[in-house]
Length: 269
Picture 1 (tube, one colour):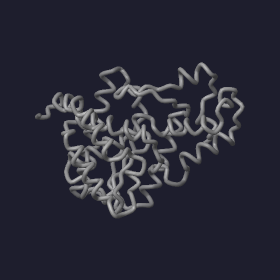
Picture 2 (spheres, rainbow, N blue to C red):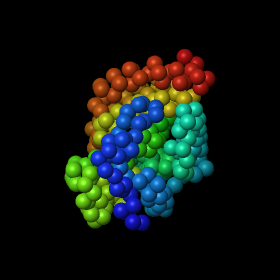
Picture 3 (tube, helix red, strand yellow):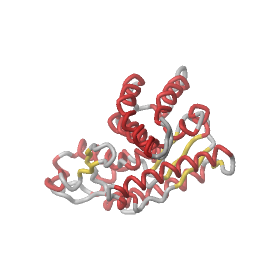
């Protein structure tokens, strides 16, 4: 794959307009300069590699639960995007939901809907609602284009105005890309910023409500997650999240809207 294709040759006007993407669920705007089709291709390749090197659990009740919850969140996202005329945003998604054997308290979603849940987080998710909190959050990272945004932030921080002048070489573009989104390594564990983690919390809360899962269960889940991580190395899943008090406060602010989505999906208040 030619990494030069990952980036768009754009001028100052395009940088501020064409490359600015608005999240249709949260309304947040972000700069996304990378070529999404190339990112999806790479993500698919990396996902296959990850599955081949790990132990994929299939046929068990837990594995079926991961697929079931993921499928409902996927369907809710597709329905919402269709309702606002943005189905094209998800046209190239090829969703997969897999349970991997690992003691880590972790889960992730690569661009394009490639989801992995580790067995180590299931005692903390506890039930379908808890699992929906996790999977809704991780799917939101992909839907919001947070990987693209992180790459773009790194490009602008490192090269600034040179991007506008089109003076960045292919090797420089590739260097930034590989640093932020490590090819052949742990692409799934791309570190997001706190703004992106907060947005994924909000978006995930709405998605789980749309899928018919009770968003009120988000607070108990995050409290369990915080307790599970005490006295041990902080899990990757929590590494750049807002502090617990901020997260709970934000969830409480977003709950009324999330509950509207939940009620519309047939949930009982």
